[in-house]
Image 1 (cartoon, rainbow, N blue to C red):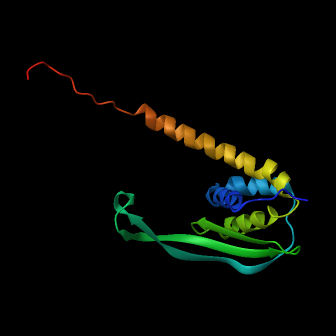
Image 2: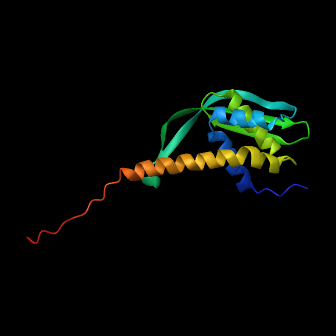
Length: 150
């Protein structure tokens, strides 16, 4: 029996797959060595979505602009359905994300977690930390010096 996965778990791995560098995702997926048979419910297709924003995170929403996305939905022979949404025009990455989403709902989930998701998560966190350290190095602390001339 597989470990029970929550909607938050699925949201986390789908986000990770959607934002992973395509080349790295492909190399890890190929190294995993197992690509189950599947049928497309929605073949990879490219489209656009409207990105909305709010001023100060609390103002009225406004249309910021459009963004290109690629989506894919597939069903494994065993019955699990996987979805993949990625920014950009990569049908290959959307298909891999959908396939991995479906496979994470099977008995293969612990192995996928160890061999694909954990390395992606570690690399993503290292990249974020490096970016934060680089930004912190440019931080300027402003202070007011009292000159006693009140």
